[in-house]
Image (cartoon, rainbow, N blue to C red; front, top):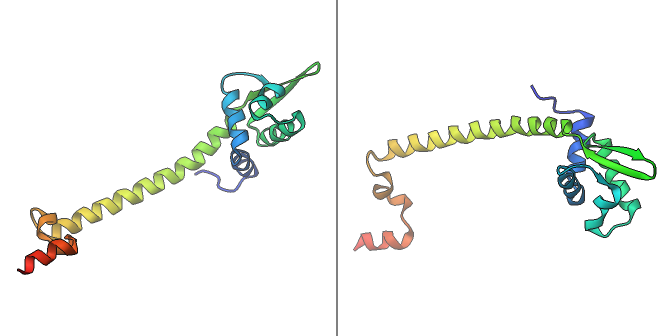
Length: 135
């Protein structure tokens, strides 16, 4: 069973809730980047980029390594896998529910009119097409 209430899952979804941070993660999927490289597409200050990076770090989504004056960031896929597992639980739930609904609708159609249920069921015709039936 997937743990539904953990601080890490909350932090991951919070971090993923911002388009700038999602873009940074996508960039990091291509390899290590400096803070400057991550900030560049957004024309933001290094301080603003660092705040986004700190949120990603707190969620465990990236790791920052300091080499001299350069801060290198790299993607840490573990927390994304946990979030994917959490989402997968609900995907399976809704897939099963929709499969049951589809089966019930097909059974209902089959009971209403054996054969071509769409052509025989007047309740599914548009009002304009039913008017012609009265003549």
